[in-house]
Image 1 (cartoon, one colour):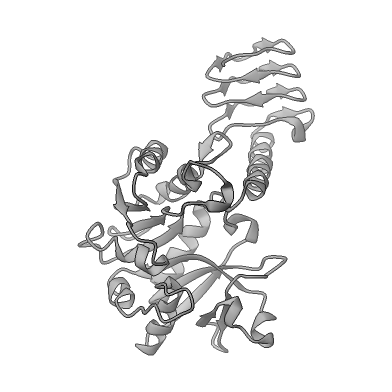
Image 2 (cartoon, one colour):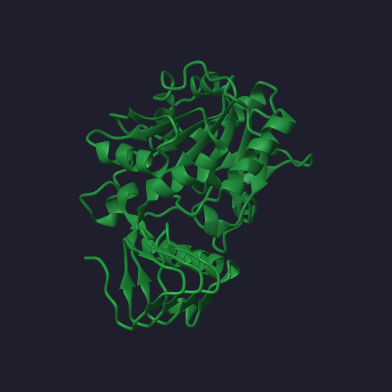
Length: 324
């Protein structure tokens, strides 16, 4: 069980220049839900007492999408008027998190495949170990430009080294920084206050709090999760890859729940598609949002269905089109 004062911060102020879009990056959808909605939905089952979404100017739609994903949560927007780095973004939440002295989970609005279980494991590690910070790490096939997590002989996190600053030995480390972390709320802003823009980008890097925590005698730790779950979306190609990964996850869940998908790779599901037992779905079927399929229903091939409830035992003829 998470502490009563557990809070979440979701960084979502990025322009997403590589998306070549007028929309905020986190508003692009996978499985018919904005990426920010997926991130909020991943933390919602843990019931944070407060959730602060850091947005840029004129990004009211981002807050609205976050609130739609979890209307039961207390979610507020915090505006970051200047882009001065991730540490600066978290610093803007000081007022929004006033009075929170438990864990603070820091997430990114463009990491839509994150699982609730991963957040829960990171919370437990930070809390049980009494660490100042627990970073969620990954081992991507191509570590490339990711920061490396340097772990000491005691298994604890010693430091994070950016790829551009790493020597050959450090670049050979496969354990990489996802950017997601859990921080002791009692120490968060004292660590943030020690950050300096003394780097080539002249930005306040959140990752630098690891060094400050260690200098203060506090331990830091790492919890690992699959790279696919932690990969951010920065381009249209990466958006398509995230869509495919989520569809694979949704199809597997549907079949595990008792549905037959004749050709799973040609069935496209919405994040909220609810499918009963003994349902049979033919090839080339796509579901828009708002569909519930009752037990034993049969859906023929080449259908597009949205915003309907299909009764138990119903037969949907091939080529049926429901919705816009």
